[in-house]
Length: 222
Ligand SMILES: [Zn+2]
Image (cartoon, rainbow, N blue to C red; front, side, top):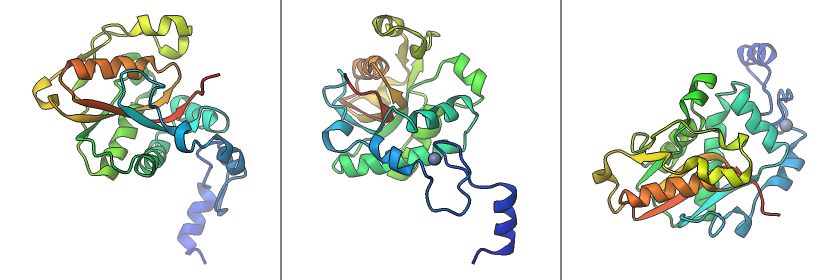
């Protein structure tokens, strides 16, 4: 039986599904759960090995399809900042289940553009990385990989132009700390893989021994 205060709070601020936004109240899961189950990636589909050049490997939790896609849109454009910790938990879980032997030295978020940060007031890869670092009990390095220049949002560009958009986009600060380390890149979504590839190349050029990645969702090759 719920405590009276918890009951009042639940009535005033009903619990909503982080994916579709519907009120779930006291229900254990939302009605979009079976749909979400279909988006869940298992085994080889979840692995980013070979899918993203430059990475030693990596993990994705879901296909970038509804209702997961809707959830990410809510996170990106709906100001749903509190969802980031939930997604971060799922990413850490998936990583530990899929690559139990992986022990990165640090988590590095893909740097957002200034425009993205200004528009949202928060930085999604950073929030996700924070949670993952906490769960894996490893440091968060948010000052090593930096955006050297503002780039167009990858999402707004045709596939053919995405790679060119990122050439020279990233830079390294404090390469001494990076030398010989195994690092874990973190981003919300990967589509062409161009961002992860460019970031991985930059980190390796800066001295990293291995670069792995974890993303919440990925588009699948056709
Ligand atoms: Zn739902």
